[in-house]
Image 1 (cartoon, helix red, strand yellow):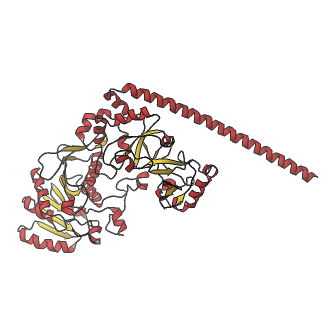
Image 2 (cartoon, one colour; image 1 turned 180 degrees about the horizontal axis):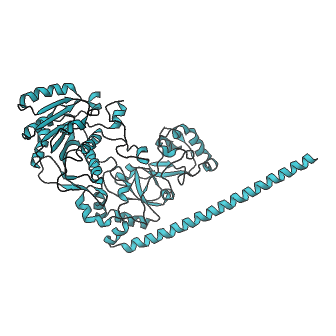
Image 3 (cartoon, helix red, strand yellow; image 1 turned 135 degrees about the vertical axis):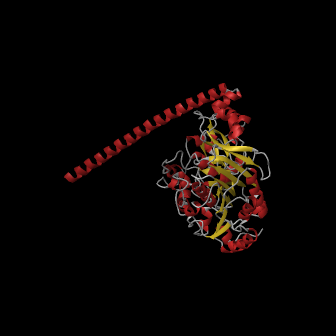
Length: 539
């Protein structure tokens, strides 16, 4: 398949093959759908419009709208050959400026909105400096950290599909679209959370590589609105020709589920575990400076520089690939960790590790240019996602990127705790037996199936900390017959945390006393100096 032109990329132009459109429309007929009106808002070359015209002879009107004049001219020729009753109307217009309200008011129900909206994201259009975008609005209600980390990027088809739901919010209708499965899930999540009147939702998986040359998970997404019953489940079919669904996704207990059947069987494991809290690895956003490899002359950074640094702030580290590739790979990388907790003053490095401080100062430009606002108004060379848990001697870790559930025990290396980067998650543990026990629980079949019921494996980072936090290890230990061991380790953790808190309080009091003594000494020195000056002046 030839590479896409700039115009194809800008308009997300993946024209639907006729055979695929025919198969998709035949699915609608099998579902007993009989529309009075058919609307294809981005009809392109008209594969869906023509298929619908043949499949639904009782439809009163079929309307196709597109921005591409050449496509519409070619389509008019084909329409004239089959449309003896003059039911098909074609309109040349831009989706984002067309007065849809006026058109929709003329259509009789039920209305079928069908088609293949553009497969392009707002970020891609930004790179192309395209004006083919909806007016800016916070349609996803993104805010705060979501916007900072890029979650405000969206598929144009997602925006369009939400518009279709808006058009039909008080009308009887059907939405049937070819789209990415990730887009379909987002739309369903929005609809279910807002109690939109969905009576039926199906996804029929398609081979996007075969039909469009696109390496994405895609589907034919069908939603029926404003019928008698409401549902928060969506049946998943592995192809357009499958007679039975393989499973269903849904929205239950305020959760988006990838497998409703598994969740219903293991939902009792959901809860908040008050003894074990999942943590993310350390975030620094400057790997070429902060991540190092051992060399015969000390360390080598990502810029190819050979450097000698004190060991005080350098820790062995693991990345997602070191955890997700099977056996844990230790000793491959090291991380320069500038803080023990978020916001800690980094000036102590200058005094205790001068070579490390000079190294950081030499790369101040790179560290200062980090784009994320989480580093703004923080001490120099700050990092994020760091705390006492980062330095626990033992950890049970999992990669966020790798598409399998496999929990690994990570122990210390070179008498130092191993730290993780921000693409991995972990539970901090304080002994090897504790870590082995927790890993055994997490790798048990009930735990894996429960987590799997909430994971969508096609996502870029399928395993998230929010999903991991849904599993209550205490409840799992009861099922596992090991509650006594769980409670023993939990007690040990509480005792250790109490000791740490007392130690921090004692340290805080000691620091205050030291500062007070220094201040008192300093004041006396000023007083003595003043007295001497006074004596000198008197003389």
